[in-house]
Amino acid sequence: MKRHLILLIMSLAIVFGGLGISSLVLADNKDEGQSDQEENVLREPLEMEVTLQRHYIDGKFEENTHTETIGAMEDFWSYYHGWQVIDQKEGKIVFRKEIPDISPYLKEKGYFGLKNDILTIFNGRPTHEQVIQSFYQIDTSELESYQAKQLQDGIKIETKEVYQYVLEAFRDMTPSRSVSN
Image (cartoon, rainbow, N blue to C red):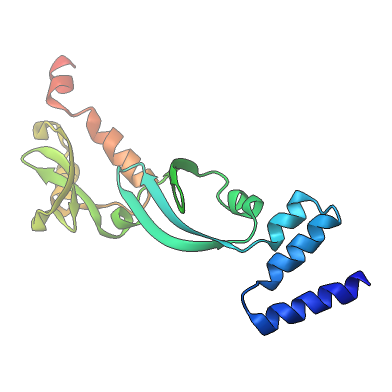
């Protein structure tokens, strides 16, 4: 009897159009004591604008935004496990993740070099002088000839290890440290 009633209601909903089948099924299933978890799956999917911010050790932020259709909130939160919620408003959420690596941009374009005796990262080789970031002054009289040549030509930053090594290797050559030695 109940099955015939559901089929009749669904047929009427299709004929008259104004009622959604999922809401009729949901209303009928609630009468049978269906759990909240099952009820969550039967609801209309939720549209959410999701912004993902990636922060790299070189200071670069990358951000992208997309619209996501969410069928079940448990799946949504599970997918973004490891991301920190920065902002949340109705229909919008911003996540951030600290990436323990240098940015893809720096891996592709970055070179260490000197500008006015300051250790600097350039967009391309130092001869183009497109500065991305400056660090600290280097006492160039402390440099070995091969180090001076490397910095003049540019040291390609292909990995996190190269980035960290160069920063540490030249840190001891700052004028304040070289005077005290």
